[in-house]
Image (cartoon, rainbow, N blue to C red):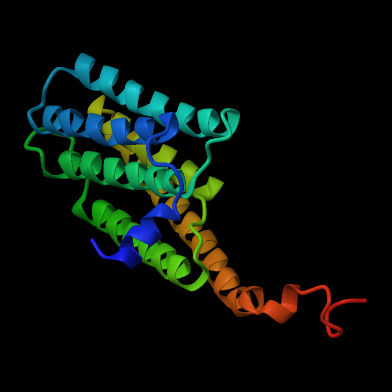
Length: 208
């Protein structure tokens, strides 16, 4: 690993914190959940593991704020766990042999959206040196996707499942627009924020 890479990783703050471990645990939990879905395994164990994953998502941010251990690692791991977990579950529900399964275009929308958002985050990290936090609209969209997955797992009637799918698509699209608006806003303001004269109170052009 190069010195520049090591320095970049160290800038993300402490890694071994309880909130970060909860996010990592959520990533681990998704492996048996995905396997159970593909194998059409016992619904009871699926629900137990999914509830554990939801609990980690609920507590990681709250523990980080309570213990004053918010870090850029956490800002990176939390949405990554959400995106990877959601994509794997929806993929399993799309390609499993049992019914009902989800349409392929649904997971395609999710993956394209998430890749664009992750790419935008990487660009902002390069331009500003900071990692931005997830938006509340993104969390709402992830929740809608989780409800859609739950509806499929519980073999909901077709009209209910279709409503969940389209509601998720609308919320995914809305959150994508919000992410893109923030991306261009931060990108537009980045040069001014990095200009020493813009924040130097001693400079006659900016000071009173």
